[in-house]
Image (tube, rainbow, N blue to C red; front, side, top):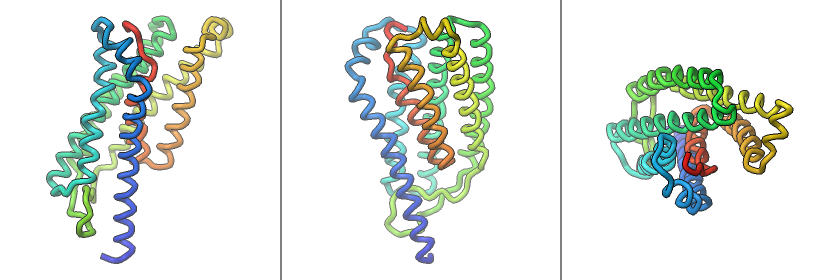
Length: 246
């Protein structure tokens, strides 16, 4: 291996480690900020569909974050790397699907149970599921791993994978765009701007739009790692407004 190839492999490995640590840091930071609110509003509330979605979204990231860190700090065989990556991809995928349901539910509530909004967002979500499952299955089955090009370097060396995994990002972006557009339409209505000027709703609108802009920029800068970070932030931050007895 040439010096250039060695440097490229090391830089790639370091980039992956940075992304994994960012997602883990967000998880810990989010818990530190909101754990007391979560105990107060969620743990003591009655069981409901939304509560189940919340708890899954809240705690399933622990599993794939740990698997991701293990995969990049352990000395795994190519076969073990494939199993680890498949498990992470499945957990991450289902976590994002759950998080998007919460976004849909929130937007549906802002529109006070509008059937049109229900059909629009529900339809996009139902279209998103089979597309994402196909892309995810295509990626995991086509992924090929090899030994690290540098002796003693931990982690996994992915040398080949189906590019259809980009379909997951596209479908997720479509749903996010629909949510943002419907949220802004609701906000721009004159009567709604008067009725909805409460600190909670103002924060909801402001942070929702900024959140979308930030994640779009992150993903455009780096398709693979940016999309992974998008998914992680969605799952960690979707719970930033505790819902009492949802």
